[in-house]
Length: 215
Image (cartoon, rainbow, N blue to C red; front, side, top):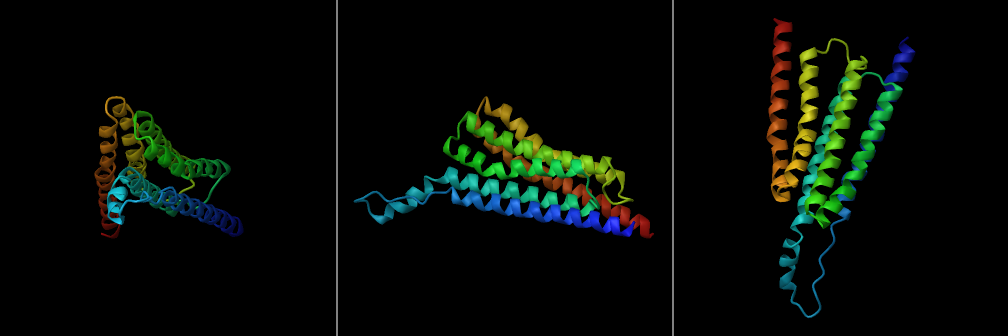
């Protein structure tokens, strides 16, 4: 039995290691799409700052996508802190999630090249699908008892709700993009405060559970 548990743990660790590699590649590809501006012949080098500023949409896309992929990586790591073993469905859900993670650089390139209604909707849709797949991965692990025993049900529920914050904001922004793409882009900033709110609730709850168990 201990040998089987050891193999299951090893398989889970391999899954995390492979996932970390995909995240690292995806997050690196983001910067490769930012082109270095070329100063036109006959123009002084002093125009370079202006040319760089004109790339604000590319720089915004890079920074925002970096933060989103980074936040999904953090959440993915936290998911697997609670997962002790894996099954075939978990492996395929994780692969599907990584498929969208690897697709984010392309969606970012499309968005920065065409920051119009379609570009915004395509980008938001990609990030929403990525987030929902991560939520589905956690839901499957919790439902099929792949997580650690004794994990408080309410803590798992708060964690599940946390996974739905980012993709829900992105889905709502798709509807907003029909009216005003710029407002839709601005709405993405809501991801940060809502995420912080759920994280603080989860931490407070877990600390409360710890104090009760030790008292």
